[in-house]
Amino acid sequence: MALRDVTTTGSIGSGRVPLDFVSLGGLTVFSGEVWNLRFTMRNIVDQIVTPQIHDAWLTDYTLNRAAGTLDQHVGISPWQRASGTDGFTVDTAGAPLHFELDVSRIEVRR
Image 1 (cartoon, rainbow, N blue to C red):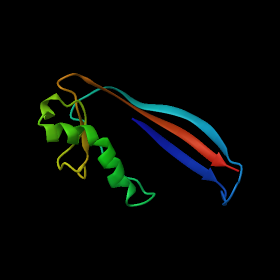
Image 2: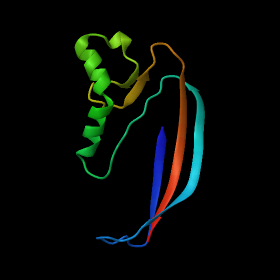
Image 3: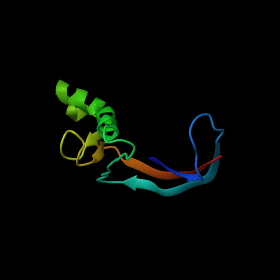
């Protein structure tokens, strides 16, 4: 999982303004085998974005559920409710799950 931490310096303005994207380096917060992984996703840009992302992430799960083949599904699944509202987990079909959490830090300036 890669997280982005984007910071703006000063007023970005509108229209065609040249911007510099400066990498502040990456951090590996965690790397290792995990069990019972549960995570959520929330987008603050617009209230419609979060359900759209949930739907896109759950496409494979939804197709396997409709086909009656959830026992063969490997990938992102809803934690409780099928909508993903309660969060997500990862079905691995019994295989170990290696999880890495990285944070990319970026500064946007004029």
